[in-house]
Length: 99
Image 1 (cartoon, rainbow, N blue to C red):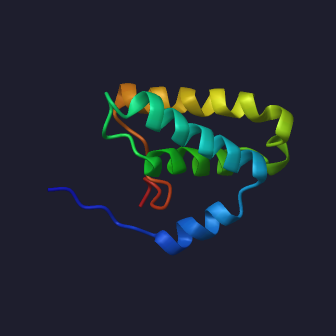
Image 2: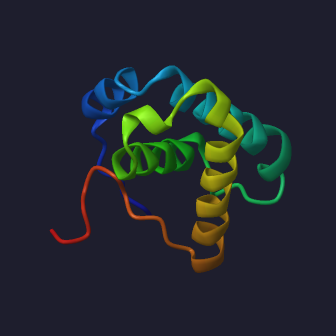
């Protein structure tokens, strides 16, 4: 049995505050998940992708996410996803590890 604490309202508010490029990267990650990863990695969900996008948004200045940088950020977030898969670890965005 697994438990997950949800912060739906907070996550929704955060996702409403990301810019257009960040939203597009999230949508592309979800498409990659649905069409490429899902058959062999069922544990990876859009929830995981949202966490990656939120960590990326917090770790980088907002002005770095512009239309022409879309591929850069997609590649970077895929790298984060690969690392998370390899290490089987992706910190939950809403609850920092220090707590």
